[in-house]
Amino acid sequence: MVTVDELFAIDSLLSEEEKAIRDTVRAFGAERLRPHVAEWFEAGTFPVREIAPELGKLGLLGMHLEGYGCAGTSATAYGLACMEVEAVDSGVRSLVSVQGSLAMTAIHKYGSEEQKQRWLPEMAAGRLIGCFGLTEPDFGSNPGGMRTRAKRDGDDWILDGSKMWITNGSVADVAIVWAQTLEGEKQVIRGFVVPTDTPGFSAREMHHKLSLRASITAELSLDGVRLPADAMLPNGRGLTAPLGCLSEARFGIIFGALGAARDCLTAAIDYAKTREVFDKPLAAYQLTQAKLADMAVELGKGQLLALHLGRLKDRGELRGEQVSAGKLNSTREAIAIARECRTILGANGITLEYPVLRHANNLESVLTYEGTAEVHQLVLGEALTGSKAFR
Image 1 (tube, rainbow, N blue to C red):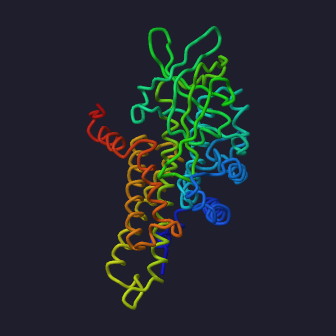
Image 2 (tube, helix red, strand yellow):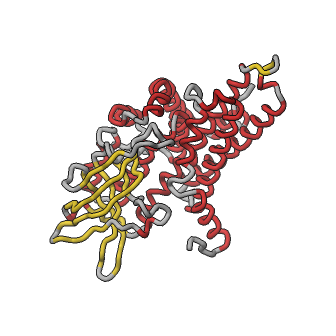
Image 3 (spheres, one colour):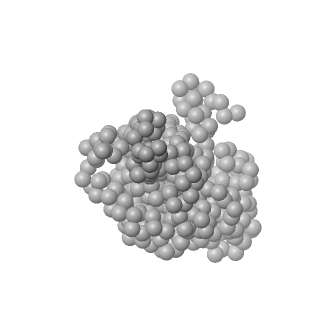
């Protein structure tokens, strides 16, 4: 018997350092997270303040960034870490992504030296939590239409607006908030570093979720939030700035979603080998083996694509449409695998005793956040045809 990794000889494509990082994160997930994740999911909560410093101690927060307490690993190593974290639960990987690929990346890429020194070391350690305020109640796939406004008042900025579906929003110490500003006669999107204890800033945790339940999600409200001039990210101007951060988060999802799929397939194989139906194991039936074989092939192909994209990113050659191809493929195949695995487990598959329906529910969100499947199809369509079809 072989695993999917062995079937596709994945280890032969990894360096010793990458395998060590992968194995360290896998062990942490097994020992620290997996025993509790079903309980967190059922309760609709996650102990961010408790777990984040442990993730920081492992070097997972902003691990692909250089300096300021960040580990400075390769992009591929970061992807492998995301795969292992999401093999436990997509909500935990969302914490890692939002902290490192969104909030920390925004400061690292677009912030001043003072902003980097103030925030990044503590965020890398997990002692300060960040969130990323881009999506609004009426503007998800079209963030350029955002209604949040930042107006000058002397040397200060005044922010008004709201943000929706913000991971870590109600537990964050700092929010990266994107808003429309007026520069001359032109509206321009700018990013702001907003300490969450600033008067006028509030966050309301969102409940009644059926997906990403082991994750904190909030709605942000900004009512006359006054910030000093140096709260603005000086090097991020226009929509390309937040989209650059989203591209980093999407890269992590390319690997992460496959971790959820792998966990589902592992659970289904283990179950099929021990569950007897008509006096022989479920795994001994042709229909079951056909399902398992098809899922293993799709998972293996997804892993090979993810690794290829990781190598391209490490060489500085990864393009936006290639990220879209990876995100579209990984999320679409992962959710299909999770659903198929549920059929193998039968009624047992709907319980939290097994991970498959939890993963499937989470992947409903992963399929649509950081760009819906349809948005990524249109990105690829534009790349292939040269014609925009967003409007």
